[in-house]
Length: 499
Ligand SMILES: NC(=O)c1ccc[n+]([C@@H]2O[C@H](COP(=O)([O-])OP(=O)(O)OC[C@H]3O[C@@H](n4cnc5c(N)ncnc54)[C@H](OP(=O)(O)O)[C@@H]3O)[C@@H](O)[C@H]2O)c1
Image 1 (tube, helix red, strand yellow):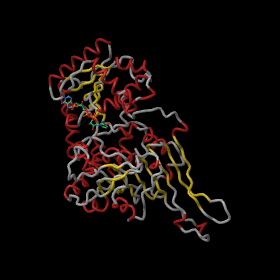
Image 2: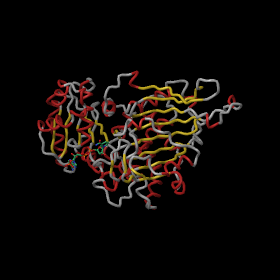
Image 3: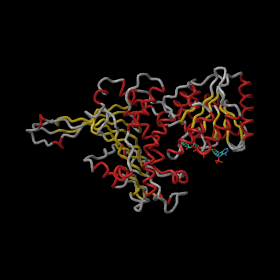
């Protein structure tokens, strides 16, 4: 496994811990090596020391010293610049040395943990150095990090450049959201339970909400974030990935392409917003100074380091999308994501339609006293699934109260600490691309986001900042649902999970 960008944050916080878990659980081959590539001047020993100091804390109490040391001995380092063609000759030489010394079958996984501007160049150089040629049954695979493009055109360009260097089956575009057990569990919940799927459609479901709420601000990532913004950073990848799993049709097998076909189909069935619709179906916001629920005062976005003092970048984005399909016609999907909101949580809310409530018409209960059922898929934290339904409050008169049936992962399964990356690394090594994005899937996502980007850039905002840190975003975000007679579900986790 070759990691480009081995001196970076992702390697330290996620990839090395993930490799550790895979080694500990004997999920990598006996003969396995990691070769880090980066412009830092380090040798094998210095790189190991760096990881020993930098990655341990991301494993925490779980760390088993013997396994950790064994893993470190598999790690090597090659200093070099990604843009230097000679470096790839040295890389080929180093790989030959490592694989010959250990008599390894040379399968190579190249992980591009680098800023996106290097994705195409590294792939081209790997190809030129002959490192992507698959022969004798040995594979060559490349994991590409996010963000994949910053609009439709750049995503298409990147796909084209990657395809010049290798075949689609060698490309693994990672979205770490798909590595989360809880996201994968949506598929199990929908398709392994005969009571769920029959009511998963427009006949029963009123609308769907998908929220990725972050309580932190940009935390030192200002220079990246100010170029990107909430919409680009979260929606084409994470939120649409979750949406496609919630809304896809069942595939006729668990084959990677069968599942990804269905995910792309559902994205293609979403009506792209016209420029007029962008004005009514999208909301953008930027936080100003505020006070979090725990009393901490936080600065506004424009005061964060490496952020322009007059930045027009959004830190909150919400969209209303409609899917043109027999299953979903008329059922809005509301998506929202933002920074410096009151809590850190990711959830999908399925709100069912009101029943006819005929039995209660002679009681004093009004229709609004009988809240609709909701199903909440909690992706993080408190991973699980909750069903809210109505029950009779004990007593002589008919009063209803909403109660909750709650499944928590922790109560049933050993929720081993994971980074989310180990599942994806393991899948890549075993050639299972189900949880990775295909070129068409990426482009289908950008096709939906592009019109919003166009309108937003043509109409610069005048009211930023328009929400205080620690609040639920701009009032327009609430209005997006209120206009339809709906509201965002109140967050239960927020009081305990402000970070
Ligand atoms: N960090 C995360 O948690 C996270 C999460 C999801 C996705 N990602 C994605 O993962 C990728 C890597 O992120 P990161 O946070 O690890 O980035 P990073 O900390 O900037 O790491 C990139 C590494 O590559 C090195 N580098 C830059 N230019 C180079 C060159 N020309 N030749 C050789 N080495 C070079 C950097 O060295 P210098 O330090 O000297 O520049 C740094 O060590 C990005 O695409 C990011 O969007 C990251």
